Amino acid sequence: MAEHPPYPVGLRLLGRRVVVLGGGQVAQRRLPALIAAGADVLLVSPEATPSVEALADAGRITWLKRPYEPGDLEGAWYALIATSDPDANSRASAEAEADRVWCVRSDDADAATAWTPATGHSEGVTVAVLTTEAKGRDPRHTAAVRDAVVEGLRDGTLVAPHHRTRTPGVALVGGGPGDPDLITVRGRRLLAEADVVIADRLGPRDLLAELPPGVEVIDAAKIPYGRFMAQEAINDALIQHARQGKSVVRLKGGDPYVFGRGMEEVQALTEAGIPCTVVPGISSSVSVPGAAGIPVTHRGVAHEFTVVSGHVAPDDERSLVDWPSLAKLTGTLVILMGVDKIGKIAETLVAHGKAPDTPVALVQEGTTVAQRRVDATLATVAATVAAEEVRPPAVIVIGEVVRVGPHPPEQR
Image 1 (cartoon, rainbow, N blue to C red):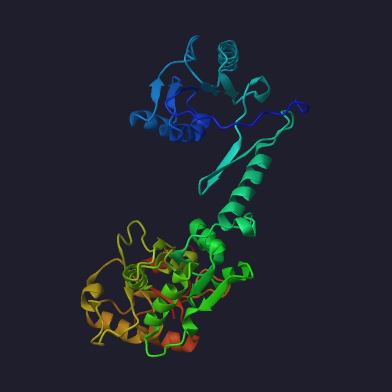
Image 2 (cartoon, rainbow, N blue to C red; image 1 turned 180 degrees about the vertical axis):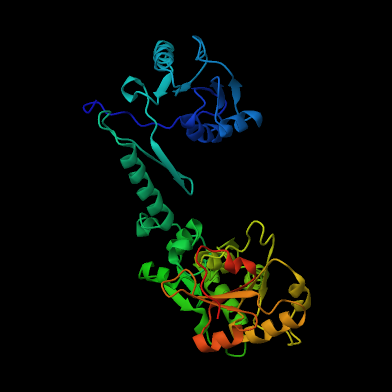
């Protein structure tokens, strides 16, 4: 086989019959791609995994609930043989050979007329990796090669500079809670394609070091105010660079629409006629507590969680938060941007009925190497924040979920 490697080809299976023998784990892995290709799939198997059965129940495939019988491959363009019966596999393989049906065998690659490559996808490109020798084939090796290629395509490291995709306009990218590995795949790819990146202080700034030298990086926190408010200055910068035909990424922390003023920027861009793409991000309101061992919901403890901004105090006339109502909820309360107001917040919650011994956790710089967790109660949190010198950014979690972790810290 080393002298005659397989010939790689892409099968166009739309509306064409594909027969799958066996409804086990192999079928479960392969059926979604066959369905996505538009194949007319016939499954022949007396049993199937729950996932495969669900595909049949949904009408995505046709299922004959019996073992293989001669003639089952009639009219097929392609066959996947994956039963637990070696004799049935051999007989079906012989039928495929006689009928000139390309056939994959899960139990014996040498007896097959086709091999299934390790495949992956990235923005309209399908990557398929095959080992050229049948003997000693290691599916883990081909899968690792596939993963490396797909990841390179997704994050832009495998795209030659002069072939780099450039889409004029603005992408509002949620960078996640801080760990650069927690940005979405799409967000990372758009960063790799950018001409200009306007970055927030709380975005995953470690990613900026990976950008090509020609990419202009603008610190949103240092955009001159001039006669505008800060947000208006950011909007103007986005519009200005996009109108120059550049691909602009607005890199934000967390999610653009969770206290990120994302919609304000979308509105400004829309009014200016600038195309805009919004890429959601992992919100710190859920991910940071999770990274610190705190589930925002837990069976028998909390059936709800509420996320609020604490950037203005409860007694500030600008506050839109109904603190008295929040005090009456039994679920988890997550507060963002509230470190310097936590004393007044805790006082207000207790004044409206929340128990003073309600547990509180503050997670500072969550998901980063500097992450730390400080625990307290509503009665002690103000003093604890001062004593422990807790500084923003920090996510505050209030509720019984703080105590459900394997080894919750002692409350101060």
